[in-house]
Length: 103
Image 1: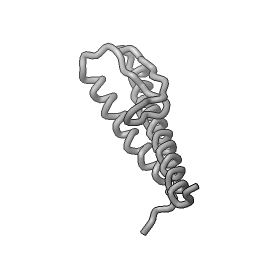
Image 2 (image 1 turned 90 degrees about the vertical axis):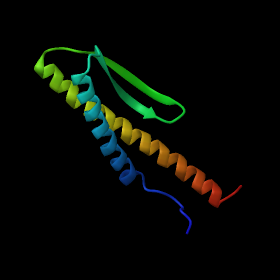
Image 3 (image 1 turned 60 degrees about the vertical axis):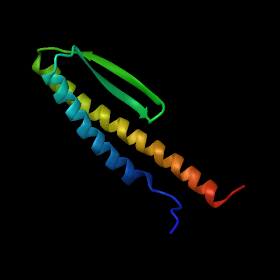
C-alpha cells in the first residue's frame, strides 16, 4: 500500500488540538512558577527551524489580564499547531508526488 497524499484539514485539526492542550499546560506552568513573562508563539515551528513571531507578555496580578493570557496561550498554540501541521502535510504531499512521478 502506497500513500499518495494526505488531507491537510484533519491532520492540522488534530495537531491544533494537541498544541492547544500544550498551550494550556504552558499557562498552568507559568501561573504556578516564578517566571516573569510567558512567550506565546505564532507561526510554523519545525524540528530544525522555526519561522514564528514570539510575544513575550509580563506577569500581572490582574485577573482579567491573566484570563486573556490563558485564552491567548491556548489560541496562539492552536494556531501554531495548525500552521505547523499544514506545512508538514504540504511538504509530505510534495515529496509523495515527486516520488510517484520521478522526473
